[in-house]
Length: 202
Image 1: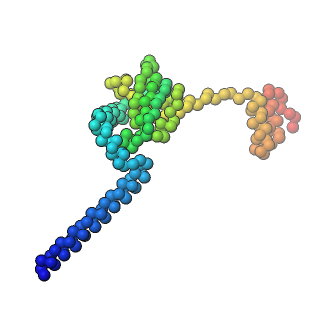
Image 2: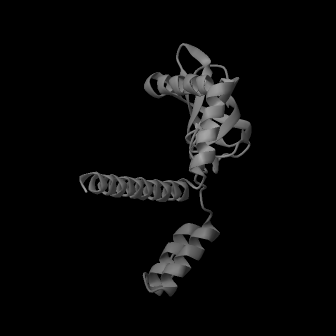
Image 3: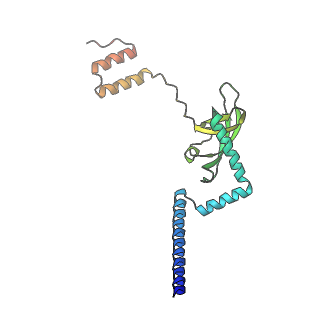
């Protein structure tokens, strides 16, 4: 009887172990599915890309780009530049953003403009703002002017304020009078000053 009881317990233990393995396998599948949904890509495919990158030397290239980006982040000098042209690749979590190749004309203050190329993984929002002939801010390696990265989109230059003529100012005064900000008498007085004529008699 002892032998049969022991065999029965062993079978039940094996069954419980298989059930636990299946339970954790199901949990792993659920986690993988959730991660794939969060990343917007298949985790198995992402891992395959990573293995392929390691096998064809792309991993070393990515590490070199990461090291260069870190140096530019730490030591780079912010400098205005103009985008001559750009190419965007397919966004990938493995690369940390959208791969971009940006041809630039860098314009260091007090120096001669020169051409350089930035190759980097770029945040999707920044990549969407790139336009040919658009102004950007780049970080330049002080020891290697050709080592650059796009840092920010430069704001457009504000147009120089124009000196409004008398007609435009009178139109604005008329708007103020219509809205009740100034009275008819104040409107006529200011209008006379703009036209250089005597104010109307009170």
